Image 1 (cartoon, rainbow, N blue to C red):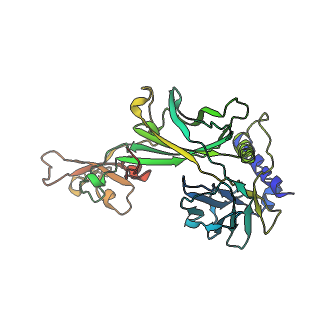
Image 2 (image 1 turned 180 degrees about the vertical axis):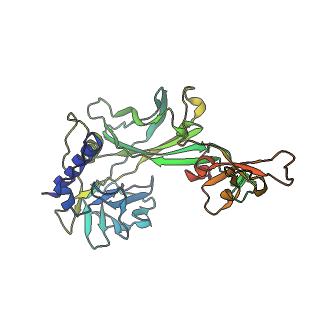
Image 3 (image 1 turned 45 degrees about the horizontal axis):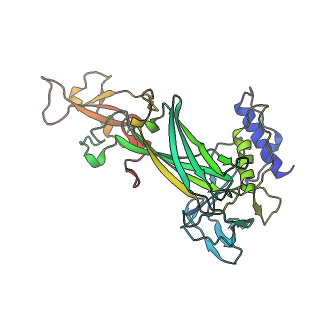
Length: 394
């Protein structure tokens, strides 16, 4: 059985498992496949942005989902003029180079040598720069906020487009914690009520203008933020990146989109062959997943305030939150009352919310005699984000 056909079996089994099968079925082909194929993500960027290449390995569908990062690889960018430069592994499986000028008269490729001494090489690819993004906008709809982008190429040469994005949003904890776990009052630098979250795109967004009179993109949908998402409860920002594709690169992304996002009914497209422009030099029959593109990208950031959205939107907190009370020793009157030590023990799952005072005659002067508390998920936003405001925030 050819390697590419084995990958198709992965996809078919996945769709069966999650779309109605009563009993999990694992064909013998799955258990017999031991190869973890190389997955290469990223583009060679010019002056507009850093080049970031992510390298990982596939896994069988019947295993626990993890990202098998490919570490300690040698990653080199080469052009057909015999120039080259190395990328540095800045995080496990992530290889990076600062922005560098690309010579549009040259073609570029990526060479990878893994720690097991296998070598992978892409085809030489011509530089194709993205035109600027005209605008990124949004439409508040009943179901949520639709973010879109507009672009055009006056030379009518781009034709094939791809986008991805990075989101950042401001959110808050369900309760405001006034004390830390040492029962000291928090100062402004220790607040854990307001935080920032972030995420990146995980779907394939592409479009082409080959059937249009002009090379113009109008309100291409980028992401729909649900009306009950906490991303839009206060303030939200998105930076959209635009890539110009060759026709072959567009075919790869369209094929990948069909194979990963449009399987689920008998009316959907069938899985098809991998269209990668990467090859394993050490073993020419080995499948490699990914497609290299080269060129300057375009990007644009916008901010969306909750005041600009529909009043009917009602963001939901992603947990059910409750308050309880912890008492000082002298005030524990029953077994149901919790001692304040549950808040101060190392790695306590709770966070103090506010200090309480037992009224006379049991009042003890000098500070709170009890504390309301909740789980850290409800009282400490840094569990799900960061309190540090991004440099670009405004």
